[in-house]
Amino acid sequence: LLRSLLALAIGALYTAASQSLLLCLIIGSASVFADSARNAANGIHLDEDLYNRALAHAGLLEQQTQNGITERLRKGEVEALYSVAKSMNDSGDKISSVMIWHALADDGSEGDDYEGYDEAEGYDYEGHVPSAMALGFSYYEVDKPRSLHYFLMATSKKGMPHQTAMFNTGRLYLELEDPSSALAYIRACATLDEEHPAHARPQLSITCRKAYDTLSSELIGHSDMGLEEAVECFPYASIDDFPQSNTKEFQVFHGAMSHL
Image (cartoon, rainbow, N blue to C red):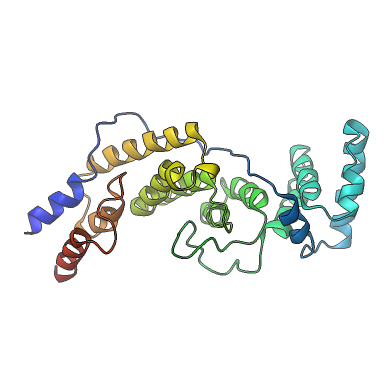
């Protein structure tokens, strides 16, 4: 029975793909809605010095673009503040930009363990997704768990699943040696076009499917995978979501594992 169950868990992971898993994080653009931006602006708090630095930089941008960004910043528009922070970051003022992104991204739940994309839980994140993504990239080289935290936040915007954040979350879980979570998020990225086509990009869906196949093949190559790790991967071992929760197959497998 043990051999059969273990073979089922490992065998379900098998794919024919032989490509190498992408080693770079994917940068994606988030959709921005004016109403949500205005609402978010009401809860933003910047200290006076940081605001003045942002305002001064907006003045420099104004000279180059003539896009009215200074006035938009004075009115508290979130996207104007985000754009100023991005420009400050590109110009070398990393500290100021990160502080602004924190003001935009942190929604008061930073001490919680975000579970990210989960239909049963809904999309619980109420901060600014592009800023959360920016923080994920900012912390990637120096603090991967913190980087993961912000990518997880970006996957959880209410009603707006973020495909790029899903892939980057899976990529980081793999680096942090959590293959089951990596499979879960990369699969969510690959199949987002089936349930939420408005939030999925065809090319990224294809990329995620290739990454899922490659990761599955690489996991099979690890002969030292233990029973517990195989059990954790089993729910995500099929791109078609087999076995689905609350089915006989799912219950039989996990019942057997609990007895073991």
